[in-house]
Length: 232
Image (cartoon, rainbow, N blue to C red; front, side):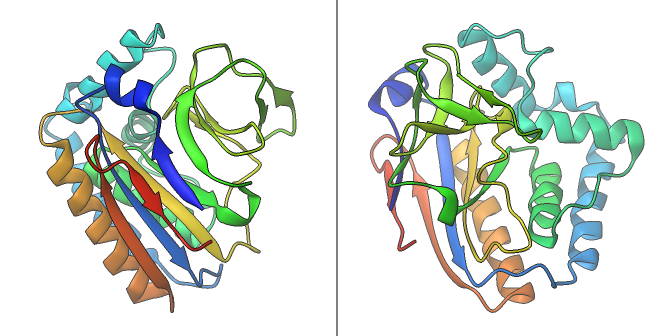
């Protein structure tokens, strides 16, 4: 299995930097409470000084969404949506230990983190522009078709595992109690994105090794090195 971004994405967003991680050996029994609390504390301290809309990581994604023709206050990146909810409610829902951990790390870094159950991905996964014929399964079980030219995560069977790039993941490959192997992707557009996504992935790999008996592989992605080969 291979994860990549299309050439058209790199051409449209040359500032993009991404980090990817593959982990095998996940289960739903890990206790991540202490780690989650520490990452949320980092986010809380930052939010005490400024709202998320002022963070350079969030501002960069807002500019990216505008370039995609989307209203950035209507369609927010996953990291902005998490930070906004955390600022307003001071808590986030508990879903699965891995998802809770990734959400907390996303909060701390203000960078969107997507987590995919690899057994639900057919063939390769690529961030690319939609043709409009792909299918997307919502968390509510409804099937949708992305708009033509919308940025999606698409697999080899034309199934969209995320819509509007970092805005919303599909229910199809969401992490569940039965999930054992995952692909995790962090993407950023701000100045310093390469260093920050690399640091995020390293932090995540360390946290995974502390909580699960996992086998981990990682990659830093740029236009010059744009493909991640994983044994899934």
